[in-house]
Length: 321
Image (cartoon, rainbow, N blue to C red):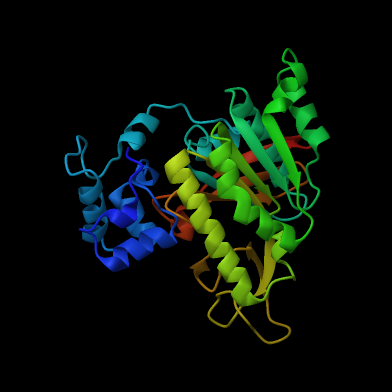
């Protein structure tokens, strides 16, 4: 794919160029793993407008308009195992390159340990990992111990491929987000980004306006990195308690109303992080050692409640298997 700037495609209308720029697409190469359908969903464009983008960038494309060359190549790549068999089954074999997995769950549900264990699959295939911890839930020593237990014949279990970054404030997260694209550009071997306890910096330090703006920037940054660099992302987030209105939907309600627990980044029907590359699951403990993992949405669908897939799990020595 070409490094030609998308802004130089004079055949595209200004609104389309602005939408592409706002989503972080700067060069034709950035579109290498996208499809018209994905672009239409991510940028809120009509499908014909999205198809026109690809027509302008690849007027002599060899592949069907609905499938990018990278997507065809990626379809033959083996997914990365999360080292959690129930989750791998829900993901049809594991986390695919260039996709996002959002793991939600109540405190103590084991979601952070799933993220730590998932690092093993990437390190085993010589992929670098950037592990960002925002609530001191996974130390470098914990990650190294997990890797050594799974691969004791390799020095440090391959921990040299993992960079651990601890963020302790909302301001640090904003700085990290500003520098993320440059970091990934400088470290193209990075195959996995883990954002552990992502909801923590957003608990009290942002106004609603600032919170939404930062989440939108994060969504765009991740969407671009997944599409253009093949980056895989795992996000863990605690469920938050929200009151239930009279119509049964989360929202503001009088004191004494019923409460529900829901994903932190979904509010009044608006999904602040979901892209056309996102899988969302929730860990639901039922006893101290058993529970289910539910697949709430996939890159192609958000099934009705009665059609949600789930897999049972057991916790063995604190690890979900």
